[in-house]
Length: 310
Image (cartoon, rainbow, N blue to C red; front, side, top):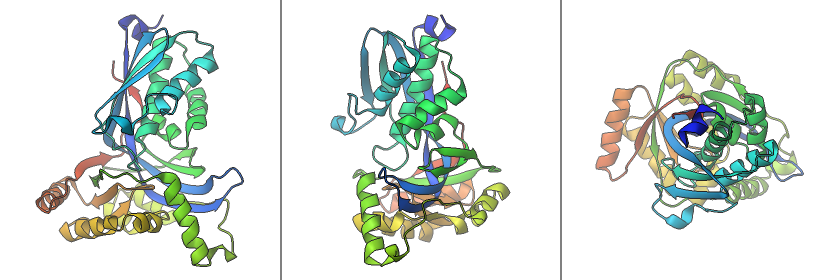
């Protein structure tokens, strides 16, 4: 039995993420789009506590609407625990307690962070001792963002976003995250993007099925210069997200007017990420936006991926 098992529970923390770049290509036969993205893990976390049990159960706290997070096999953390049990032929169960801080349906990978944390927690609790590579393989079966939540830091994602390569990112990047009570459905945003491309005649030449992250994005990360990164921020899904939620464009404009270098819809939204040049400016912009009725969160990145706290 592992030391973690002997203690009776395992506590794992995993970060949310933002997409500092997201290019969306053509849709494959399996329904997924080709992606080229840069993830950055930020200091907004999900906590998962795993305890021994005969069956599988899950509780969730930190959400305003109790019905916003499923407590059955639709929950990624629950699916992660069951997948690990099947893969390792573990015969017991687990009681998962999820403490959420990442916004639900906010485009920040909160559910994926829960799944990554559940994999690490159950592996330690059960003493199954899977290698990082094996955990990555299981994570990739759960969704494109789950492997990144395992590793954290900054990484380039290609394919469906789950083929990861670490990206060198020097220094610290300060972000203000403006969240939204009203979520955005990822499938709806992708469908809207496809419709926009059809309306604009972009499908005369089909979007490529393989993409690369532009060199200026990677150069900006390597230099650690937030002003250079601000110029490189891009999200192909943003136009579609703004069609669904035009107010997000106003939020970006207000952030820039308050002193942010630039802003972007993170992933499929609706979270808006505003990049600031330093922590002091971020705090100043945060105060100004609060005076205007917004409630931005000040976070920084990159931070580590899923890790055991106790």
